Length: 480
Image 1: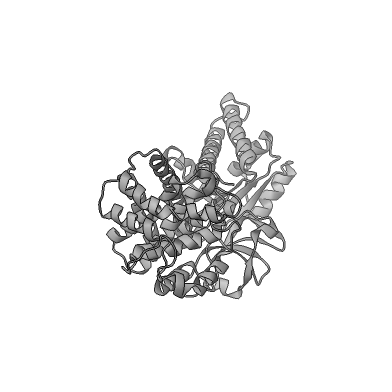
Image 2 (image 1 turned 60 degrees about the horizontal axis):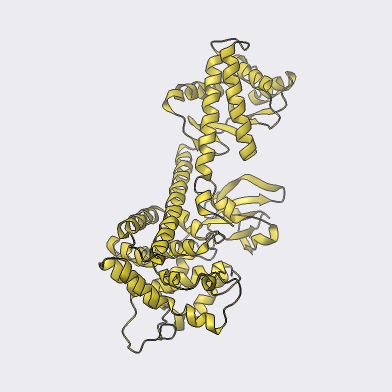
């Protein structure tokens, strides 16, 4: 199970570790140009880099350094070096380009002597006719260095590089926003349990951040919403429903104020459950009739809790309505029962769809086994005329796609990938993160857009169950 707070900084920590390690490498290279290898200053910088390298390898088990169009990557993650050492980066890039080197793979058996030899060769090696990388690797082998391999220089389209950096930035920002929202939900439910005031302003700030990110690109947040194995899924569920609801709100053209109210209402839709016994909400087995009688009280309890915990404004009013109505069907079945035929609020109808989708795919409360997203969509469509607004549901199915984000799929080239982004124009050709093929895992995964020219030679055969392959999809979603 995943503890959200423990996962928030995973990639940031890796990038920071890579920054420290590579800064030490540049300082070492600069020191080598001034001092002999036996000098105390050189030995001190060598020890510092080596210790940082060993710590990085212990934590992440690989270390491949690449340069491309003046940018530095460590294990495919863009690493931004502080201004003080950018001259060192520039000198390294120039020298590597001169030697035709695009990167270096550091093995786990590297020694300080190997590092010293590498530093010396990078400074003094002279090329002759032939493959520069082959010459350099042969020279390393001649000097007994079998734990370092240099890679050929890669020609990367600058636009593609900018896209990679932008993708990484947006994914990191999405993770920060998602887990901040989970923490906000946890705090507001704790306040509601203690009958304390809930910070409306803080909640609105979180919603506005989600709106901004969905308006740029919803895929990163939709990926995070596909994760279901959090330690306490109750909090993540509210965030997921808010993300899905806002994505649908964008599709129907809501204004920013309406989106703010919708996201706010979705975040609070299940707050009534804090008034129920914890053993009921967290019950691992199926509900009996008495359990269901209690559970059906949470919409009324939710509306009452919101009204008592916050000062009334348009956001709070819509949240009270949504909490009360999100289990009432268009034909007036569901709960709580109502005698009047007043139309259901559109926000309630949106949350009814997104809440049901997330609950069924998680297998936490109403059912105890998760259902694959594609199958859930089929179930929702089957019940469309009774339980859901048909127009809104069709739009939502279009957003989630034939192959929902987070699904694992088998491709016609016998590789396995995870859907990272849907394609509205061609639903059958999403963007895939290829994680393995017949030769084994891809580390790091390979991005493949099936709608691009290069990706059109590949098709999806079917979705597959990650558990059958013992694959942790969450690990890929939470990494870059």
